[in-house]
Amino acid sequence: MAEYSALSLLKNALSGNRDWKPAWRKASPKPSYDVVVIGGGGHGLSTAYYLAKEHGITNVAVLEKGYLGSGNVGRNTTAVRSNYLLPQNTRFYEHSMKMWENLSHDLNYNVMFSQRGVLNLAHTPGQLDDLARKGNAMRHLGVDAELMTPAQIGRRVPGLDMSRSARFPIYGGLMQERAGTARHDAVAWGYARGADRRGVDIIENCEVTGFLRDGDRIVGVTSNRGEIRARKVAVAVAGSTGRVMQLAGVDKMPIESQVLQAFVSESLKPFLDTVLTFGMGHFYVGQSDKGGLVYGGDLDGYNSYAQRGNLPIVEEVMSEMVALFPSLAPVRVLRSWGGVCDMSMDGSPIITTGPLPGMYLNCGWCYGGFKATPASGFCFAHTIARDAPHELSAPFTLDRFSRGAVIDDKGQGPTPRLH
Amino acid sequence: MLITCPYCGPRDVSEFAYQGDGNRKRPDPASTDPETWNAYVYDRLNPAGAHNEIWQHAGGCRAHLAVVRDTLTHEVSSVRFAREHGAPTHGRRKSGAKA
Image 1 (tube, each protein chain N blue to C red):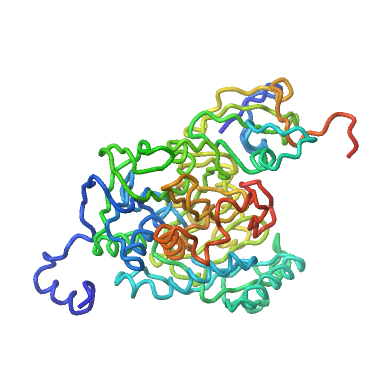
Image 2: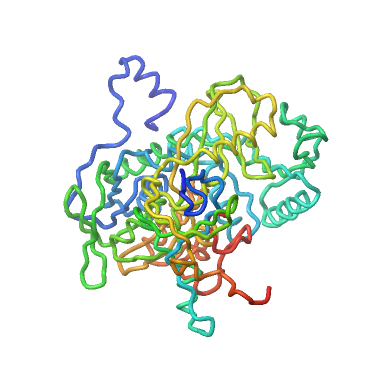
């Protein structure tokens, strides 16, 4: 019997819900492991889960400096999609999408994956042509995409200003119906529980302070909870990549850490049953099951590790929301926060062996890492177990920059704040 | 976040355009060493703490500024004219050069 099922709910209800086990043990670090994963975010936890599930490597520790879910896995705006232009990205994110579609069953944990669609709006005829091109590129690789007319959009999203006199009139949009949202905390908790049940030690409040070396080779870490040796050390620390790599003596990376803000409004009755993105600027919005609007916009646009941003972006995001939905002007913001994003130089991630012997690196997710959580862990676990990239993540190695094989979906060049 | 422009005084960050890492030095244009160019184009120090960076007061006097700012607190500790600082050495056209 699965641990969570109708029968187990009934059984535990009858016994007063006193017999539930914690979702994961409070493990203490052992002196050594086969693999140590630094970073207990979505990617680190899914890596540990797939190391155990797909490769039978269960002597694994996940080291998290705070508590699970305190970083970007609990800070994102929860959208899941695979609407990319370049085939390397589309294949990778579509694999992730397929994993999302079965994730709750696989983890026996409800991640509340809701395929409510993601709709990108176009506000000029040229932009609509561009979305049509992207939709065709997606369909060419077997991914669903549908161009929508203004009439269809108006029916699907009531409340949008569809008038010709809107500041940026809506000319159409590209819809991916299979895209949607997931409950981000549940993703962290579900992977943590799945990894824990397979023997992985999840160690919270354990901050890595340095690396153990044998010659050039990384053979473990030092932490605030002592030395932990490992045959393989995997780094999946998102916005902290620069800091952790500097501990290993790698001073420079093709990464800039920048802050992205996100917002939740007060609860409203359900009116938005899809995720919507604005094309004239940068704005995206969905409505959570509790009724709050979950939304955000651009990066603040400068280097930051602060997990909080400044007011110009707040003003920009709010004005973009009101341009789309004039009726939302009186709605109050409930809370806002910032997350530190590991912006890569081409807007695409890095999943690689190295850059030092004994080390494996997963970073550069920019602000799109949440939707990649399953495939990132799946491919990174493969890379760690086999010492070779997975077919899907082979284009995302670190040496692509020096080889001139960058994957720049937006064609912005090495200016991280524009990706 | 306020940046104190040496010419205009303290102004809101929205008046300024971020031009990125001020530690980068453009290699000699005659250089053909791919590693040097690769490092210049792609590699960043990305420190948690004091960071040398270039901003332009785009919504003001348009001066390029060499700023030292803490990436953990956003506190600005130093602002100078970039031309006095010897930066930016990337992306700047020599005076009199053809467009």
